[in-house]
Length: 87
Image 1 (cartoon, rainbow, N blue to C red):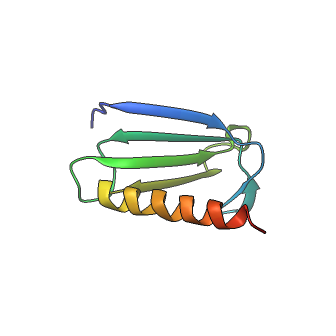
Image 2 (cartoon, rainbow, N blue to C red):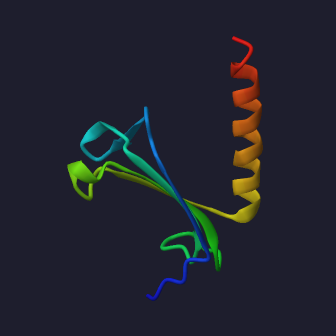
């Protein structure tokens, strides 16, 4: 399948963990992009890959979200971050 990424944002993850087949591992990068999904039934999805390249390909958490679900996640993240600022 050929991929045609429309928009990609990549960040370094200063602190965070992901859980893969071998258990928990420290995250090093996160990539967010809009593209054709591998598994989700939509034509295009917002995809998020959390990685630790030093630990090989199994140190990856991949997410494919519809646009509506991605918007809901963004709103939930903002609400949680706003509330956390008051603790």
